Image (cartoon, rainbow, N blue to C red; front, top):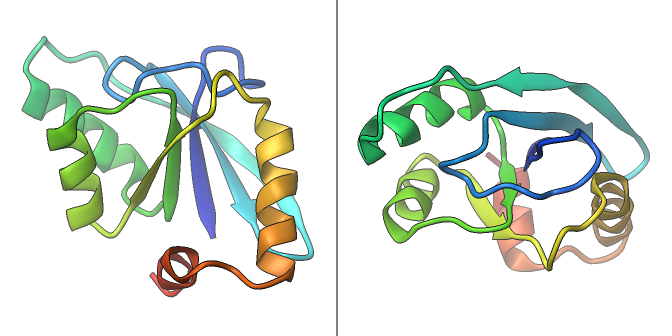
Length: 119
């Protein structure tokens, strides 16, 4: 599955969803993980809907998006598009989160993750 991480340095999850200019995208399975690329977000004005739409356009095929913060309307739009938003616990290293996700996938994923995997 494709997972996106809001990042400024391609190493840590350190950006708010609507303020992130780039997202690191990874392909993750229980037995392998690979960096797919860095997705750049085109600059938009301060209109919240435009910011959300710009991110959905680029990240619409992702299953999960990790961020430091996300507003209610943006989270609702992601969920409506079958994308699960996850707030990071502080500024976590992307590779650490990838490792944790793989461990969860190998064992017994929680129901929300099983649903997300079936996207």
